[in-house]
Image 1 (cartoon, rainbow, N blue to C red):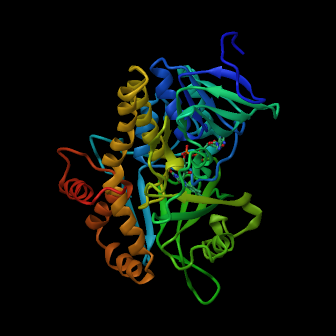
Image 2: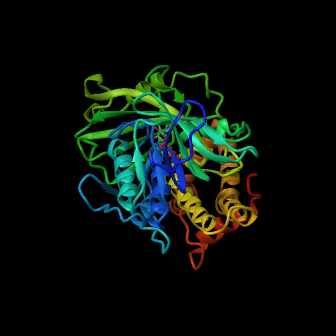
Image 3: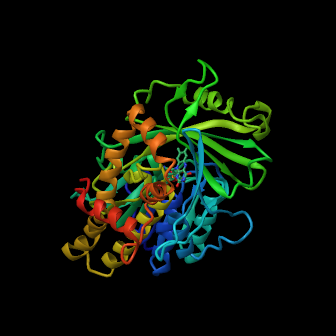
Length: 434
Ligand SMILES: Cc1cc2nc3c(=O)[nH]c(=O)nc-3n(C[C@H](O)[C@H](O)[C@H](O)COP(=O)(O)OP(=O)(O)OC[C@H]3O[C@@H](n4cnc5c(N)ncnc54)[C@H](O)[C@@H]3O)c2cc1C
């Protein structure tokens, strides 16, 4: 401990004083720490686990996420990154390959990479930029001043002893558990879409080197004579002999919360061709694991009393496609930009205005799109609508190219094509979620 640090309250040991504390070193936290440190700020990045560690995910990255990786100087051509050209949609007895759109604003390729090392690569980039990463540090509470504003965090350190960190600003990037915002009184909104997804790795020499991300709009069961299961599935090739296979169910489905998702996954996989290797337990690599997908800004406000919420902590998964990594990284970059401006001003109203700008910009960027996403989730909760849409939509490649742009949120804001114009207008006209 530095000699001139203030004394921590209670029994905690004061470990450090920084400009910004980032809680959680997932994609959101590490990206925030990277951009903050790059601007010369003293950043403490606190992570309760130790790398390398698993995170339940589909491991799929769209061009939106790739753009963020490029901004961090991460070499996505290096070994371990598996590039894809687009999305293969399977449904209504059809398989349609849709390439990622050619845009000025985004690269035209996606990637896969297991979260086992993806998160570590991002955390290492943050450290290389100058952030201090502390692993096995479990943040338990905010430290507040008399006005209820954050001045630091309490944690349980690697030695299981209480620790304290001080900073005038905290980024909550603690994922779907959102313990930190909860401690600040920010509860989850139940009027927003939410999903549950499960996934498992399988050895699949046949499918591991796929150059498309594969998305299944209809899942069938072997039981009950080809019964339609609720939910949507994916098969993503990991390029290392394995595939990441999973499915998600949205809360607009009557099956939400009433289904055994693990059984549903093996039920669906039992209908896949034997040569893919996914209907044989012997090829499974690890257990089926699941987690919630907090969507459409299901925790707001995104800024309050010195705390900025990024990624899953602020409920930022895209309701259209279940993608969360890109939004965690993008919100993190936006939070860092607001903090850099804020810390260049004296504490008080001027600094506060800069911090509040984060929530305002986030709403302006994604609020209308997430409103549309909320309507979309409600609509596809009706299996009848989904069946009709699949049957009549898939045979029309132009329509499906439009759908891909909408679902993956990939348009050019200016000088794009007519599809971009329609999507941009729709998101502008839709009232932003609040
Ligand atoms: C089954 C499944 C499949 C998915 N597939 C995809 C996909 O293919 N593509 C995609 O883009 N998204 C996918 N997602 C969503 C994606 O995983 C998340 O949106 C993304 O991980 C959010 O990043 P984050 O940084 O906000 O949170 P997280 O990745 O959850 O990171 C939070 C970090 O904070 C740490 N932490 C938590 N609490 C504390 C604490 N108290 N103290 C210190 N550290 C703490 C955690 O250990 C973790 O490292 C999927 C999700 C699920 C469940």
